[in-house]
Amino acid sequence: MGRLVHFEIHVDDMERAKRFYGEVFGWTFEDWSNYAGMPYWGATTGAANELGINGALMQRQGASPQPGQPINGYACTIGVGDYDATESKILNLGGKLALPKYALPGMAWQGYYIDTEGNTFGIHQPDEHAK
View (cartoon, rainbow, N blue to C red):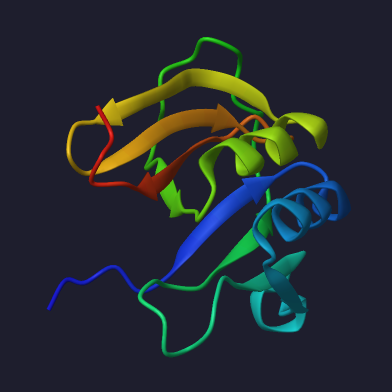
């Protein structure tokens, strides 16, 4: 056991975060606030037969991350089919570049961004020709 089964992204503005993740990655959301006792939206990240996990957006309970602050938690990486198109969506919807696209030689393209809520996340496009 010990497999990761759920994630939570802490957000300041729920509607802004739902728009960002919905439009960039195609995630859908369901209101689970009654279960959590606070604003909490379940996130479906893909089809049940695809590799990956679902999670949630939850109302941040403290201060937002400050620019340049080290990560205090986990940085999730999201698989994408077209790195450059996804990066364009991220930046057009208010995300910021944290670490530019780089090759994992013979495996993939990887890079990191900051969402509209100040959280760091990665994107990963498999590509055996990356170098």
